[in-house]
Amino acid sequence: MATENTHYGASRIGDMMRNCSSVFFIGIGGINMSSLALLTHKQGKRVGGSDRVRTALTERLEAQGLCVVYGHEASSVSSYDAVVYTVAISPDNPEYAEAKRLGMPCISRADYMGYLMMAYPRRIGISGMHGKSSCTSMCAQVMIEAGSDPTVLSGAELSIMDGAYRIGNGDSFLFEACEYMDSFLDFNPTVAVILNIEMDHVDYFHSMAQIHSSFLRFAEKVGREGLAVINADDGEIASALAHADLTAVSFGVTSEQADYRAVRLEAVRGRYAFDIVKHGKPFCHVALSVSGQHQVYNALACAAACDLCGIAPEDIAKGLSHYGGARRRMEYRGKVRGAELYEDYGHHPTEIATTLKGAGAMADGRLFCVFQPHTYSRTKALLEDFAEALSVADRVILTDIYAARETDTLGVSSAMLAQAIGERASYASSMEQAARMLQSEVRAGDVAVVMGAGDVYRVFDYITTEK
Image (cartoon, rainbow, N blue to C red):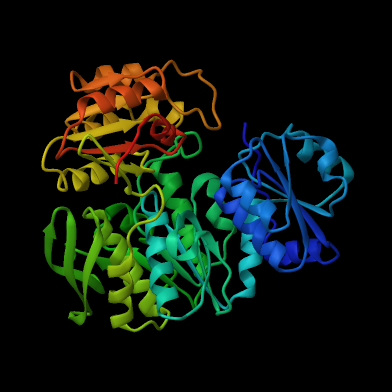
């Protein structure tokens, strides 16, 4: 069972942190948690934390002077003044329980992030069930190249930042706003981007009405002086915000009423070029270096948000053309037997289908997908949708479900998903077997996507790739 968000708010956390000179982060090895830890460290506080295993991220923290312990022991928190925790931990985590016993301030990750961002007058939050990391990364690329020097907290690593975070000296705080457990309701955006809305996180969200309510509340966080940037082509967003008390600007492809619209789209091997018109007038021409029609929407949202932040159209176009993708977002990993290999984080049926369609447009031969389902609850609730989405590929290899925060109590498996897909799908009992199956079947001209939000990247440990 996950630990709940605190929802204290920035003002109360400011009071709690006034006399705190040191902070301990439980789950410090996560992408977002490590970013918050480093941002706190840069502010002059003594910072430490814990995680289960050593990773490249924890080693990077140690190299910058942070103390990281591996495993969770009650004694680890005793020399610190406050604790920040990820909600992925259970309430009986020994460090969390000890901090509670000692009466230390205990603040959830999202709540603490909402507090930190208040130091910046312009706060741009990227939300949506899909595309958050890609759109945040696009915005970061544009803003950094344009010289606005933003502080960025993303869910994916980006080469121009050499990681998933960046501490700038400008007045903008760009961040990924995750909806899971309503974490984004602890944030304080002045510009709230909503890319899309649909059913996901079925262990928390039980209806579209609940999801609509959450995204409405997030959009209204901008207040009377802020702006929401919304996808005009998404009917669920329209339903959610039908009675919203806010000022919104829109982007889209099919909607003629969109404030920022992509027109004259052309695709070459899955990569789109198009013109953006603003209020019906020419704004800029964009030629993307990443594949898939979903990236058109990400680019439109990025263009709108960056325009609202005062970045010139020509700088927006240039930054978008230079954006080559974030880590694990259709990241090129080399070739095997002449087939191109990519790694992607997609784990929802909509993401899978969209990404695979874009990947298929890049292939001269067949399209392969090695997929690791993420959580039992999502797999069971959306089993038929997963089967349909994965059927976009010519060949599907499924590894065991990544449990994440759950236990196997729902009677669902990757073997069942393979059966639902049919003859083109096979179940692999290990990452090594998945790698052997893939490597034995691909040939020159094929494209293979290794996909999932868990540890499916371990497949690459058993594949020798070529450039």
